[in-house]
Length: 252
Image 1 (cartoon, rainbow, N blue to C red):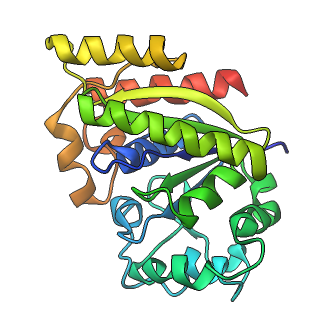
Image 2 (cartoon, one colour; image 1 turned 90 degrees about the horizontal axis):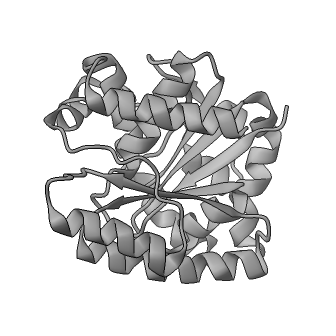
Image 3 (tube, rainbow, N blue to C red; image 1 turned 90 degrees about the vertical axis):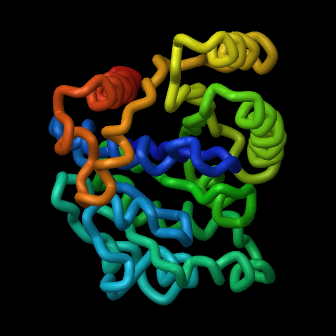
């Protein structure tokens, strides 16, 4: 099976990376796809959002990155269907522990070579930085999805991320493709939001995907350990992520 590995990245925090991974993963599983989610953020928000207590998991992605065990031993099922390679606060030390390791950018890619063929789709929730962990995700990925709040500061961060992508393509992953920018927490009533999206499309020549509207339902979901597809099945937000999942499946 040819698996697609999608890194969901933006070095700016608070742009709904975790919500996007959890909701898209749930939508893909709902559609019958076999999905692996990878929590590559030391805050372990994805692990928590998928109904798993980060403090209770025996093995995490940190153990895998350091070569203590293979990924199959750390992957666990989640209540909504996708499998999860969880994280914990331990992952915060990985940057330093990998810093002097030869080939450190390829550690995740090598680990995923063992398990990715078992899945239709692998989604990676990246940390809000452009450090070693995010570089590992971009090196392992076939595609990149950039969630972005339609505001000026998020807009400025895209340029920095694109510089990193150029370096990744040059040195570690020549075939990395950009799926597009996903506008999140979008309010079409504001002129700024519309102008930022237009500028992104024109200035960086990036596809802009169908926006995900702002909704309080997204804030409510993580506390239940479920995605919006379970907590508010008929909401506009749930439908938006079903549409994103459909676009991913159509492109495969």
